Image 1 (cartoon, rainbow, N blue to C red):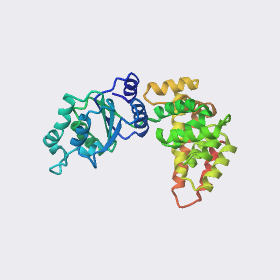
Image 2: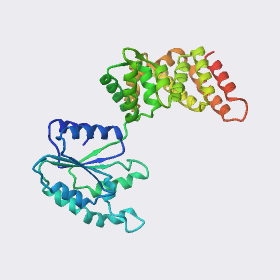
Image 3: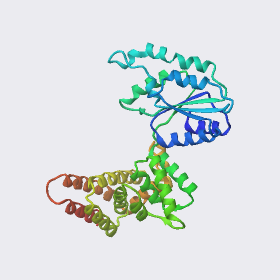
Image 4: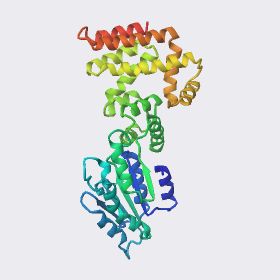
Length: 348
């Protein structure tokens, strides 16, 4: 089950007896908690932490009937703490013990208390890397829970779409490029994006929020200056590029990061030119067909680069990016000299 599917069930008042929220994505979890909490009357919501309360006590609470709150929501934090400790260094060796410890949950769910919804929050482990096997243990322990919602981190493309929805709901206007920079500067973390959009809504009023406002108001705003440099170079705008470069060098920014982003943009532009793509819409559709998510304003940026640079100039630009990156990693000359030379050659 997805977070959206659970939200739809909440709206229909079709609540499951128990739900396991699995994964670290904060924004979706917060939306689910707000929706579920709003579905229950005041005074009918309880909370337990399995680092402090045993699972059996939580089940006892769920079984208890109340004359004053026939419908109840019980939110259970740190569901991972219910798992028994492995009896050996191998985590899979506790499968039998986990089954025994989970019997109390299975017994309850065979005849759950009407009107009671248990929500187990297991946010400690991610879906990849070393966390993956630990998360599978959590999933196995709570196998009898009827509904599992995977809270995976949103991709940059998904985060961009959610940011558009948040801006629309907040009722203010923001430049498309500025919204791109906001999403990328905050690492597509929708929880952080939502907080910053709330702040921008208070500031904006009837004004259009642009790049300057993002740089001034958003934490990690220096990162947005990097994207401003990338966009200026992609448009072959020498004056703007040198102005942004001056800001970056004064702030001591990590300039190889700008080159890395610019390299990606030039590679996409080269692919677009070789494919004969004639508009930002064609560029967006082409990359999405080959599995590379791209929103419209990003496609516009790539198209601007295609329009400003010939195939030979794009190939030369990639060589200049490589040379500048190598120059930045040398002891001499000064980083600013390396980057100014790069800007002058690229925009010649």
